[in-house]
Amino acid sequence: MDSLQGLFISLKQAQARLAPENAATKNKALSAAADAIDRSRAAILAANARDVEMARTGGMKESLIDRLLLNDQRINGIIEGIAVVIRQEDPIGKLRSGWTLPNGLVVEQVSVPLGVAAIIYESRPNVTADCAALAYKAGCSILLRGSSSALESNRALVAAIKSGLEAGGGIPDAVALAESGNRDEIDEILSARGWIDVVLPRGGRDLIQRVVQKARVPVIETGEGNCHIYVEPSFLATSGGLNTAADIIANAKLQKPGACNAVETVLLHRGALALMPLLAGRLAGKAELRCDAESKAAIGMEAGCGLSLKDASEEDWATEFLDYILAVKTVSSCSEAVDHINRYGTKHSEAILTNDVQSARQFRTEVDAACVYVNASTRFTDGGVFGFGAELGISTQKFHARGPMGLEALTTIKYLVSGSGQIRE
Image 1: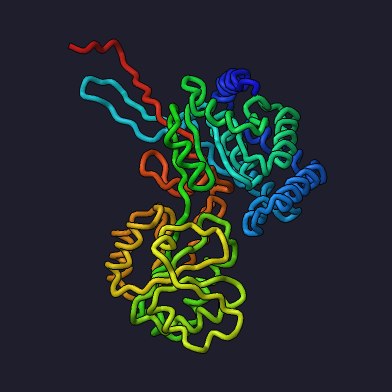
Image 2: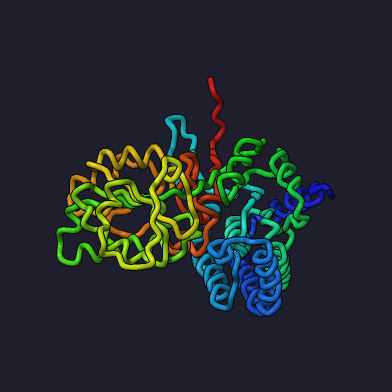
């Protein structure tokens, strides 16, 4: 395998040139990159078709194929995501705080670029463009290391982005792709102290754990999404409550099951078991249910044909299925639901369906997760939906950045101290 050292040096030099650029200059370059993606869509789609064909031949499940797939609508989404990044306020040079010490020294805390970032990710070629745009606007250079399953797509996207940056008077060397496909690349990136300032893993448990355990550079951990929806009887008691609960759960499971914010386990209060026949009917022929004894018994005969039903196992509570599978467990209280979530969840996105103010407050306060919802689908945890235009990933850690990560996640602080001859005695 060829060493990535040349790329490390190039990215470091590019970041030094990019850091002092003003917002107008960076926005002009990003606009040209978006135009280049638009002009190159035929080549990008052709490259993506080769990746999809190879993935299907290799037996990749369809829920993961969907994460890999690009089409005109998704390319339009990529372009609009870059446009939103362009419209956002430049975070660099922003005065966060300031004060004057008793001795007259003026202290200012300002935002500066984090430096050289690397992202190691699976499938999802849209991540390539999203992260390149966010990093560039934040004054950071970025090394993109996608999975082999999306290599052709990533090559085409990065080629378009770099040509656009150059055409727009930008710094194309600020974006680079590690494209050998060799897994040894990952170890080299994780050991690049002094060259890579931060690495972000974005993918399944195995990838994330490999990065966290082996990295010798700082890591912003983006976790898997073992997400839950807890349903209380008070929600079902209102007019239309049963149908609304079923709609929310079906959306959170079926709309994009391969996404990290899809629901994997529903926790039903014993007083809310009346939801089971309707929920089972809604998911019949669409998703497999893995139920505990009480929720299974509550289904009765109303679900209709086509229902795939299995007994839940202990392993199911801890599994991010990323598939058309939903586990269901019965609990006796909000406290029991919170305990279950904090034991098996991955600190990603959790939801409660309730009309009880006290339960909502308890859930919000006690659930340990980046995003906590009341009476809504977990599928909204997304940088684009939150108004960031694009995202680096969903951080499930507690330092520096948490939840959907936009521009601010690629900044750090610098203290500027101004004096008039003060000395410390």
